Length: 244
Image 1: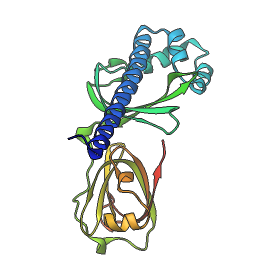
Image 2: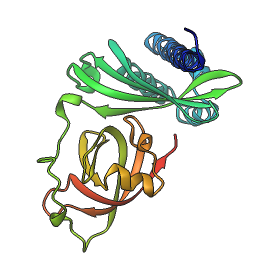
Image 3: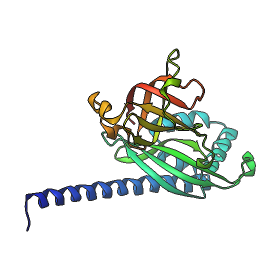
Image 4: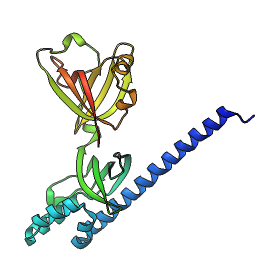
């Protein structure tokens, strides 16, 4: 029997499907731009490369490559940033849809010119939409996921919070786990993961923080106190979501 509940459920599933399709389309377009830029870089074609960068980047790069040796160095670095293969880990788009970030796990070939062995690395590529087209704004290596430094343990031991020292810690959320007495958030900063401890989910909600603010891939900044002995453990007393 088709009832109101079934109708709402079908609409909900349809919305999920549309959201997934939109994300897939964004990922396809961003990777197309990324691949096209890399092809131009491999060919050493500056005339094709520069229009694919954001207006601000075009301006800055043009200032730096006036001399032949500087152009050659720019192309060398551009070739070094071309992966031999990669997989898309995540795509995020800022509110308004005018900027996006592509997270990749990439394999880079050995490169004698910069004394680099064959390397596996996570990478973050930022894009801006200008005149209706995606342009590459920046790229940032995030390190080899197999070489990430982890906290000594993930035990919740609030008696070891150094209350005499206050500070801040921030980065991309890798995962969040909710326990009866506390919330554990693992935050990645380059090649290091930090364990951040917050109050339990119920208390966070009472303070006005939706649990989804702590979803993986979101960027957060936490204020509070470090662990007395493990610099990769942190006890948060406040936090804020960093919009992309």
